[in-house]
Length: 64
Image (cartoon, rainbow, N blue to C red; front, side):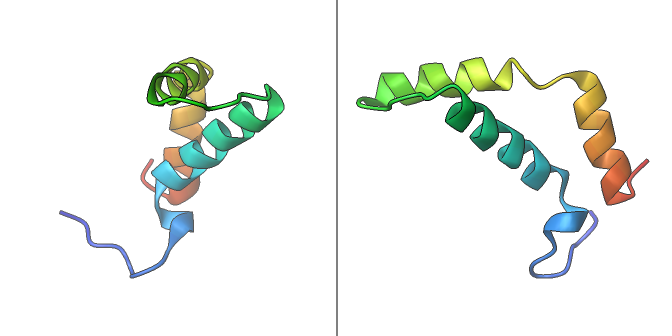
């Protein structure tokens, strides 16, 4: 287990993925009215994440 400092988004690759997901949702103008809308929007947004992007986030955080 690798413990991170209390607030260190630069060391946490998930923060960059959240940023990418939020940008995708904003760019495509999703309107969330029901729980299922949110699920569908997030599933579509997750589809935009490539293995290369994930590798880059881990590299940026210093894990690779």
